[in-house]
Length: 352
Ligand code: NAD
Image 1 (cartoon, helix red, strand yellow):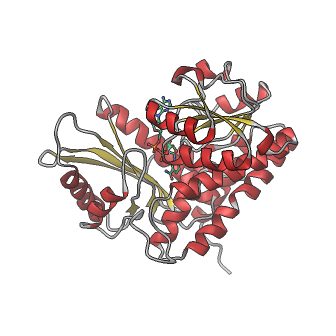
Image 2: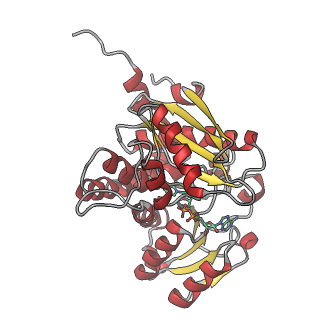
Image 3: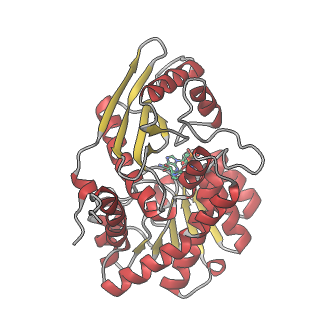
C-alpha cells in the first residue's frame, strides 16, 4: 500500500524574498527533499500581488517533486518565483540579490532558468552561490539552455502517444502549439522536420510570423488555439490551460506539451479522459530541462543527459498503456508512480 505523502505534506520550507535595494521580491518554496536537494527553476513574471506569486510557487514546487521523482533524479522539488518590478530596475543587481538568498539555504535549493529568466541571469546568481545550473556549457559537459532537451522529450513523447492512441505517425498529423518561445519554437522545428502540419499561437506575433515563414505554420489568434482543428494540442506557454472553460473546446485527441501545471484542477485529467482526450502528463514529458540541470549540477556529461532524455518517451508509453488498461487518466497513474518513488525514499530503512 502506497501512502500519498507529497500532496498532503505542507511545504518543507517557504522562504520569503524581500530586498528593497535591488527590488527583489518573491518566494522560494522547497516542497520535498526526500530524494535530494530541492531543485526547480526561477520564474520571473509580472504577478499582481505576492499571494498569487506564492500560490504559483507552491504549485510549481509540488510539480517539481513529482517530475524529479518520475524522472529518477536524485532531487527533491522546489521553485522560486520572483515578481518582475514595474518601471526601471537593475536586473543584474536583482539576480545577484536572489543568488545571495539561494546561498543562505546552503544547497537545500538548486535554481536554474524558468519562464522569464535567462543564462545571463544564472551567471549573475552564480556570483553569489554555486547552487545554480543553466550556466553556459563547457565542451562535453552538461549545461546551457535546457530548452532543447525539454523540446526533445516532448517531441518524442508526442510521437509515442500518436502511435499508441491514434495508431498513426506524427508526420501525418496536425499539431496546434500554444506558445512558441524557447521550447515551443524548438518543438515546432522538430515537428516540421518530421512532416507534421503546424498551427501556432503566441501573444508575441513576431514569434508566430517566423514559424509561418520557415515552416508554413498556420497562425491563429491566442484565444482560438485551444479549439484548433488538430490531432494534438501542445500547451507550451503557461499553466492552468486545461480548465472548465477549455476542456469542452479542445478538438484534439491528444494533449501533450511542455507547459508546467497544465491542469487547473487535478480532476480535469479525468474530465478529459471521459471526453476521449488523452492528456499526457506534463511533468512526465517535460523533464528534459531538469535532467540537463541535474546533470550540470552533478558535474555529469551530455551523454548522461541524452541517455536520460531518451528514456522519457518509453516511460510515457508504458504509462499510457497502463492508464488505458486500468481505465484511468495517465495523470493519475503518473502521480501514483511518482508518489511511490518519494514514499520509498521517505520510508525508514528496515534493520537487516
Ligand atoms: P518562454 O517564455 O520562452 O516561452 C513561452 C511563450 O509563451 C512565449 O513566447 C510567450 O509569449 C508565450 N505565451 C505566454 N502567454 C501566452 C498565451 N496566453 N497564449 C499563447 N502564448 C503565450 O518559456 P519556455 O522556456 O519555452 O517554457 C514554456 C513552458 O514550458 C513554461 O510553462 C515552462 O514552465 C515549461 N517548461 C520549460 C522548460 C524549459 O526547459 N524551458 C522545462 C520544463 C517546462
